[in-house]
Each structure stands twice: as C-alpha cells, then as structure tokens.
Image (cartoon, rainbow, N blue to C red):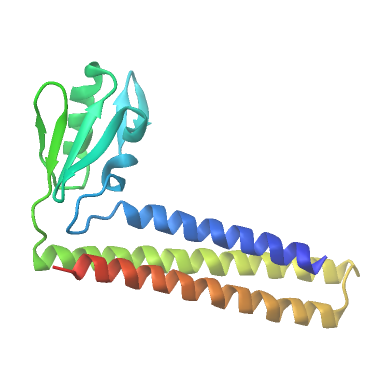
Length: 185
C-alpha cells in the first residue's frame, strides 16, 4: 500500500522535473539550440502546431539556427510565429529556409533570463510540493479507512518528505546549471 503511494509520488515528481527541463530548454542562452524554437506554436492550416512537426531545425553555426520547412507553403506562417514570439529574433527568409541569427546577450538581458529561470524553478518546487500534499492526503484517507495504522501514516509522511526533499534538491541543481549557462559569456 505505502510502496504504491511512494512509487506514484516518484513518478509524478519525475514528470514535474521533466516538464521543468523542457521549459528551461526553451530559454535562450548564448548558444543556438533547436530547443529554443521546437515548441513554438505555428498556425498551420488553421491549427496551432509545434514547429518541430513542420520543419527540420539544425545548428549550422554556434549562434545560428536553420529552419527548413517540410512544406514550403508553411514558410510564411513559421516566420510570423517567430516574429510574434518573445524570442526577440528576426528571421531571415531565403524562400526555402529561415535562418535565425542569435545576437550575443547583453548583461541586462542575461539578468532578465535568470529571473525567468528562477521563477520557473520555483514553479517546479511548488509542483513537487503539490505532489507531496496529494500523496499525504491519500495516506490520511487510507488511515481513516483503517487500511493503514497511525504509525504507518507517520512513517509514510516522513518517507514522502524525504522523497520531496530529494526531488527539490534536483530541481535546484537544474536551475543552478541553467543559470550558470545563461551567465556564461
């Protein structure tokens, strides 16, 4: 009974970490990365579609992204989506592909990005705590239904706190790594 709760808690916390890592991958650093634009929503035949499904994205140079649409008709839509995004990049369209040149980050922009990263990391910590809260609620329901004893409830709460602490530590490390990556000149 308790092991099932622990297993589900771990699975949900891993999901929170995965979501955080995907979210942070979209935050720009000094280097070009396809993750920067992969999840960008492009209006494609009236349907918002992630860019990764519409084009191949490569990094020909350290500060440049090359986007080659599978369908030439989607080129203008991709260009509009990039301009409308908060990336602050201007696409260069040559009729077949789009090149995105990433200018070096200013110190001010780096500080803004660090604030965004810290905010997202805090959201990740909150998500982990919410998972813990839900799991503790489940344990208390089990205890009320006499499926587990009061001692097992206390033991379960302590174990859930240990699991939560471990995942929050991992979330903090991910945030520190991304912050270091952004501040790297």
